[in-house]
Amino acid sequence: MKNRHAFYFILMSLYSGFVSFTLHHIHFSSAVGIAFLCFSAVIVSALIISWTAEAAEFSMSQGLAVAIVALLQVVPEFMVEAVIAWKQDVDLMMANFTGSNRLLMGVGWPLIFVTADVYTRIKTGERLKHIDLRPENIVEVGALFLGSVYFIVVLIKKDLQVYDGIFLGILFLAYLYFLQILPEESEEKKEDLMPMPKYLVDISSSMAKGAVLTGLFLIGGITMYAVADPFFVSMKEVAALLGVSAFVFVQWVAPFLSEFPEKVTAFYWARTIKLAPMALLNMISSKVNQWTLLVSMIPVVYSFSKGMISTIPLDWHHREEILLSMMMTFYGCAILAKLRFTLSNAITLFLLWLAQFIYPTTFTFLPNLPLVG
Image (cartoon, rainbow, N blue to C red; front, side, top):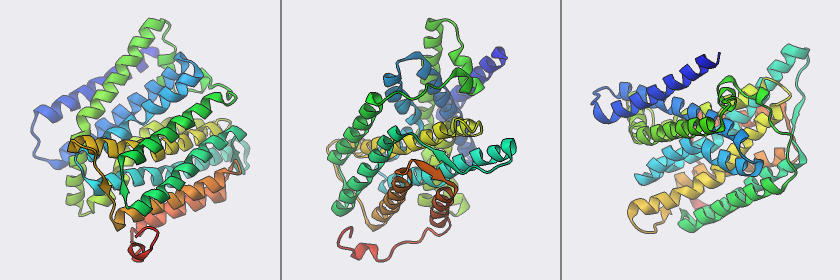
């Protein structure tokens, strides 16, 4: 069994290396071929990073684990967003970050409930009434709420600047600080892990384990770095071939590919029922990471690419997308404040996302609003 898991890691690492080399040394005339290599490499590298992060959590103190694992698991999304920011494509910057946030809440959170509900019905014959969170989880709610309040300032200013990034970065650090000083949650057990990260945790030699975890993270990170730019280009080309707006394609496809592998574990936990709260919290934590830390990076990378401190102008469409994400986040805060996530909450979030996905229409009145226009 262990040999099989080792073989899978070796195979995934070799494939990552193969794609990274191929994309930079072999010319492809087919946009679809490049897209396939890029999309598959993003999924594989995101899985490697996610599993490595989970295993690493058992090799460090809980406080440090919170900070390190939170950073490791958002690497795929950050790589894609950083490439877009470096290219100074404001439209697609807004598409990726607003899409990733709304996809997490509108699809990720409801799917956790549905998964737990289905397995509850299978095992007990009864439906799942709700997923309960702990009182300490109000920290996540507070971080989301404060981040959303600050985005009102961004809408009023009609731009995103480095000092906005600094504020959101400080908010993220404060969030991590409060996570560390709160009473510890019951620790995740090795038995709760998926087979692949459990294999890494079970490596007996501490030195060997450290070397393997470091090596795998480097492989995943380097692969993401190598394919991020071709991935971005291929998304625009595939969107053109399909006759779909690049904005819409990047808004939903890029976050799905970079986020879903990271969330495989959350769905794995949800099916055990007893770990459903941990699964939901994993999704909520990712939302906090992307609503604060991810956005804080955008104006910084944008300024570096220009060679000077620069302002990212936000037109009415950008502000509309931020407003939609902000309103959805405020609703998320409201339902989480009661520390209970119900079926009606899950359905409402999904319908809010679905309406935006099917009817990506614009608020024609938005430019005329004194507050945001």
